[in-house]
Length: 373
Ligand SMILES: O=C(O)CCC(=O)C(=O)O
Ligand SMILES: [Fe+2]
Image (cartoon, rainbow, N blue to C red; front, side, top):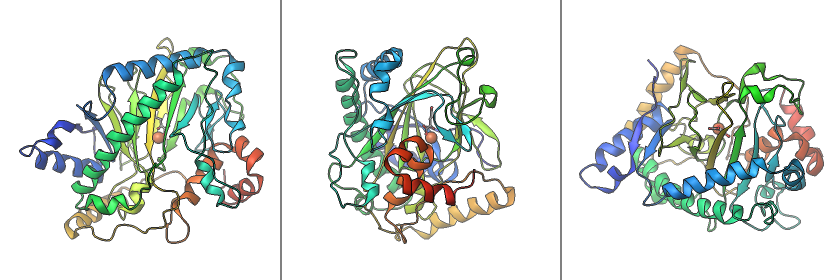
């Protein structure tokens, strides 16, 4: 039977010699057989309770800003796919996502002319007007700093749990590695009655906050900031949707396709989705942080994975094959052909076609030819 619940891990167990083996065993099982876990007791590296509360407050403030203020930082103004996406203007799995969001990242300069196009994934943020929301930038930057620190340690533990020397993983990173994040607001269904879908002729009857997808990054860390339950769901390998419990102080951690690719498929990038919050439950705020690797990396998968670990992967995949469940089209990285940035860039183009039309019309055309709705 495929997983029926999301395992909970206590990060402090990793820092005590007597509990580390059991921590790594639980982590290995989560990474190979689930693709998701809940993480607690991470404050020594990650954000504190107060810092989480602060970013939640800034999210509410940001989404409450007048439309014209939010639209000053609309993603269409950024060749780096950073900035605000208005409600119902994003597509996943051929349907409208009933959410609004702002994409933010480690503050980096834009690439120079002549560099590969995909390096435009990196660049400066579009910060909302500080007169309107004065504490926004500093709160976001603190959050990025803390999450970067936590994720740097956590990826080493993930590597260790599947028998990879963490030093090998470090070769996929560069100094000042970009990390990305989003503040997302999912209005509850009662707030969506007069809203029109921008991208497609769709209605909230799809119940799609965000459609089924795999993340394309290395590892994602999600802070479910409001108390909504039964919103974020994970598809187990028999096709059953399992709700990710929302427990105060626990971060959701999940594998992305990059981790899957560089671990020879040992780590599974599990499909997940978000449902529209129930009427009267209020707007759901969620804050995912995406740990990414050097876009220029063409380094193939790690070779030095122990046989016992590869055997666990085979065992899992054999069952998935028998169950016959997998869905969704996405550009999957194939580092033997192109640097990882190639696939990441094309996934951004597919998700934000209006931005792509303005900045990369030719690549958009290619992407649309390869991708059938
Ligand atoms: O809203 C959430 O909790 C998760 C969102 C998500 O899966 C994503 O943006 O990739
Ligand atoms: Fe996701």
